[in-house]
Length: 97
Image 1 (cartoon, rainbow, N blue to C red):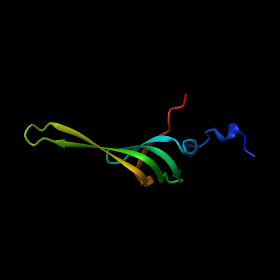
Image 2 (cartoon, helix red, strand yellow):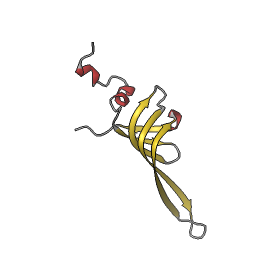
Image 3 (cartoon, rainbow, N blue to C red):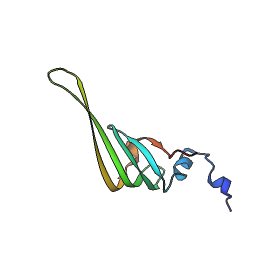
Image 4 (cartoon, helix red, strand yellow):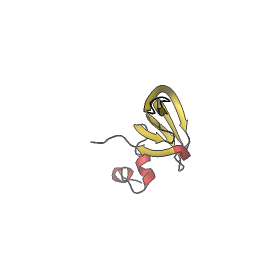
């Protein structure tokens, strides 16, 4: 039988993800996409199911006349989202005090 201390010990990278189940996490994806949502499930490939998700997409466009970079962000809210693990760059658990 596992003790409480063993349940909260981080020995492998996926242990940090396991400890974040049912909590809000931050996920950075390829293509300048960011997600913040509640982690419902994951697997060893970092495929994840997130709930109550806020997605932020950042795009950079070049002005044709001035050649200045124009940075645009768009946000959307999704009730549930399946995230394919091969697009994941970073996963940040909630801040623990």
